[in-house]
Amino acid sequence: MKTTGVVLAGGESSRMGTDKGLVQIDGKTMVEHVLETLKQVTEEVVIISNNKDYEQFGVSVFQDEIKLRGPVGGIYTALKQAKHELVLVLSCDSPYVNAELLEYFLKQCDSNLINVVEFEGKVYPLIGLYRKSDEKEFLKAMKEDRLKLQLLNKMLGTKLIQIDSSKFDKKVFWNFNSPAELEKLK
Image 1 (cartoon, rainbow, N blue to C red):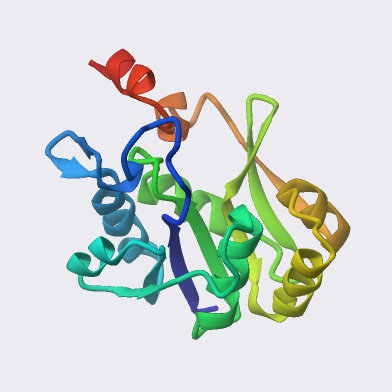
Image 2: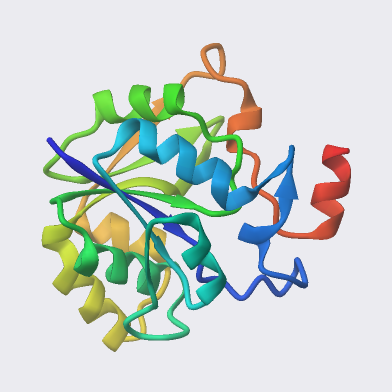
């Protein structure tokens, strides 16, 4: 099935002190790394952000429909704007996620459920395949102030896709939320 790729770049980046998706790693912004990867595995790519600076990357940028609702709000906007039923969501602060991982993930997904990655016992809901048909449930959750993404996913039916550490380096799961985390990279 055709899939819309979405980069969530709407966070406040309070720990980073600057918009983390625009921080440079390996000669490119983090969001550029994620966009390049999504373009390899999806038919449409968009960014969800309230920062107009993301318009420079040549894909559609949508502001949160409902502000300050965290990842649930970002995914709701993505589902509302996506052209396709399946919506592959990634966070802007995960520059090392690669096409090989996403292809492996997508092959194991169940299109009747929300699918998220589990690696070494940790769940990654922002490496997830969501369904446009769940848009109303995300809106309802926001209206009821239920903003914990993992709880909402569980309620809607989630398949955890186990990623084998013998096949993928844990580096593909690194995300960067603070200058200290970026410093460790160096």
